Length: 85
Image 1: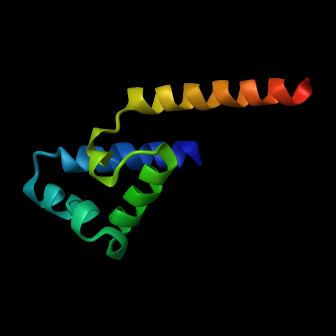
Image 2 (image 1 turned 90 degrees about the vertical axis):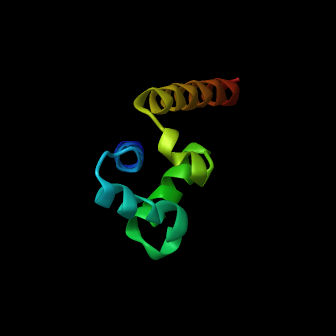
């Protein structure tokens, strides 16, 4: 699920920062259409996955997602080490 969520979050962030008026207008559906639009539902899933506010979805970057993946991996290693003992 990480790869599709990652791609979706970056696509939404790029659309919200786009130079094209039409692209930005459609992407604004993330904030106003929310569950009524496909992009809004995808944004909600990504925000839930990465623990960010819907209004912060435009600031999700590849570096943020890499950091999230590293933290999640370290947490899983830590939890598996605790279960072994």
